[in-house]
Length: 453
Image 1 (cartoon, helix red, strand yellow):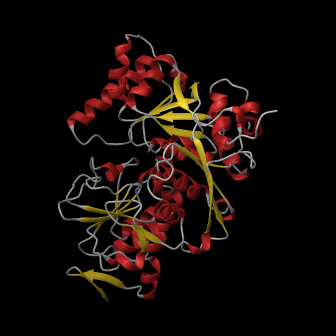
Image 2: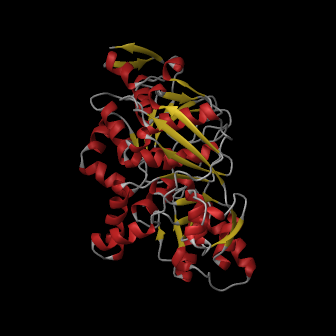
Image 3: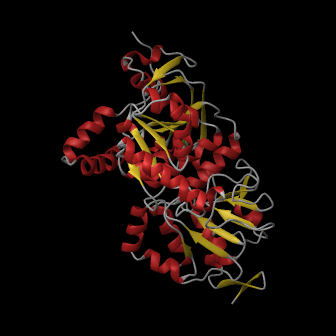
């Protein structure tokens, strides 16, 4: 009889063609030859193509499993970026890759979630370090290098080690002003940026189960900043129906038929499975926090940074550019104005998010506050364009990384926070929480100093 198995053991066993019912016999560290259900890349696909060409193949072997999205530098900010995009478009057409999303569709992780490109229990490998994002769907998502993706294009297979599993359990309830981003920053700061190196992080507990779908995506995504190879949140009925609706639309089948397919794909971790460690934390102890540069694991309460002035605020990225995040921005800025001397950029994670926020009237209210709206995509997150910082400038961002030079200038500083805190800071011109704005609702900034008008 097989030993109880973790989600990672089951997911990798399935992708290796093994019997999932005996996945518990796969010891952590076991090397498996896996065949991922989806192989993801983005603007780096042109570079991957150059590596793939060394295999001297005319055709990729898994065109139906390749997913490519142009999202990192869109629209193209330079001739070099434009040429890169042209090469990718030509390659996609030549190889018959149907799962391709061009400029403006949005960020790969958000788009492939919306498109139900990967189902619960499936394996997605991507040439992007935040591929653990797909753990919110109950899928095994892992980042790999460009060379590994080229190998997958050429062979359809790759070696992967079965990772150890860490269970993070959040007991109790979160405070009303605490978001999934605060939870992630708290966990990373409490446990360390290398705590989960090459581990699968299983997230559970009352506080996790109570998160919205957007919140679960943010939390799973940020586990990459803890070093996780993959993350996992057990897919409940809300997740399964979310995937089923979108799968039905993509395949042109009934939602009932799609739901059956989703249910058959789901894999759950056995509660009695052996794991490396279990960490249980109280959700009630978590408060809104900000990660100070240049480390994502240096988070402190918002109140400790209220004297830090802000030149730029940014809400977006694969971590926090979803509908819930735009609602948080709208709730903070409606009826207010961005502080004089502060720029506030909002970049939706996808065209679907932008369309829905527009339909609900939020975009108009956001723009009325003096916010700048960017094309759906990664925006300034990695310092390519749409908000590169000048030397000495400070940005507060809803992104996932704040190391020196992350947003294009090693002489600037990037603080990380939830969209609500970012929006409040944009209005105040300094780092504050929305609660502080509520205490002084007319706050604005003149001559670089916060005053009440």
